[in-house]
Length: 454
Image (cartoon, rainbow, N blue to C red; front, side):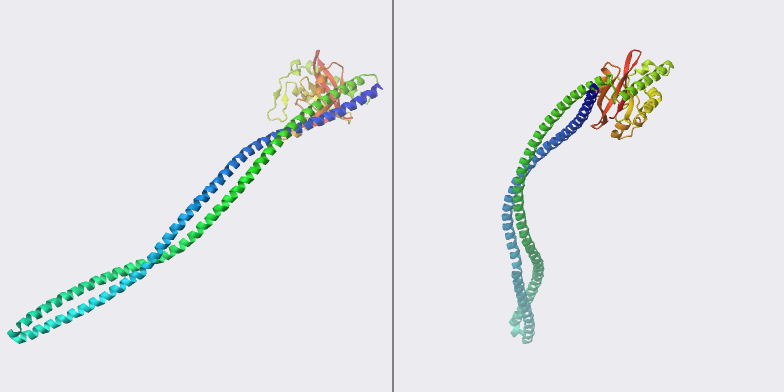
């Protein structure tokens, strides 16, 4: 009955260990989720700040749109008036062409009159010459008529000179007028082009005014959306805060439950260990015997090493753990490590192969340091792969759990406990282990462990 009670207690301890491991993993995930939630809350705070800035910017944008609308409206009115005046000026310039052409017609008429005056002057001069000839024929009786003929010739010459001068000036005036008319015609063409541009400008101004109106409407819509988004962000922040609080409370409850399970696991392990020390034989008896035999062999090898000066007692108890650079998880070396790898690992490999249920045999010092392990668990680490390293390069690492600590600190010839083997990243495996104390020169070095699955 005692043996059966012990086995049942061991099963309870195993279940407690598995459940506690599950709760530890759950708690780790909750903590990781809480960390991510904290990051999310920080991002939400940043988003809230940005959202507030967006609200302010949207409101400012709306005000700017309204101001722009007013400015465009006023500018549109002024531009419309200005364009109207420019259009009137262009129309006025265009109308000058008719007046200038009338002026050119007058110049041509005056030129015709000047030509006629020149012709009259030439005829008068001929008349004066004829009168002078006739006066000379008449002698003294016609002397007075000769004087008149001379005066007629003089006046005819002045009239001819005046007509020629007038003709020259009218010719210059005609040329100037024609050049002016040519410039006016070019300006008229430009004026017509300006009129086309003015019409396009009017259309552009109308389109700009329409766009500003649409911009104002969109700005108002943006303000509405940002106000609604601001409310949603505030609600989301509040929800995240409540969820974070709930996650923290859940993590606390899980940790409390895990502690209670570990307490129950400890009590069940105590019953298992007590039953294992009874006279009855159980399914654990074989592994207890194998553990005691393995511990005796390990101590014998170490004693021979000390006797042969291969190892000193100081080297054996060296706790100057020197970290191996680049190792992940961290590995350490002491002055005992090389001796353990060379002379003890073969023993651990052979002892592990004695039963298919045995997971592994190893040594643990008082601080949880494993100087060596079986070859399958002592492989070179893979850079950048801590998950693989945790499972396959367990040598030279440090491991400590409540059951190992209890065995290290306890008094007895052996200890039979169920515990969780740490596989890294929150992964555990429930094992049953026999721990046998290793003592040298009356001083406890640590434990010899045989872990097995039942």
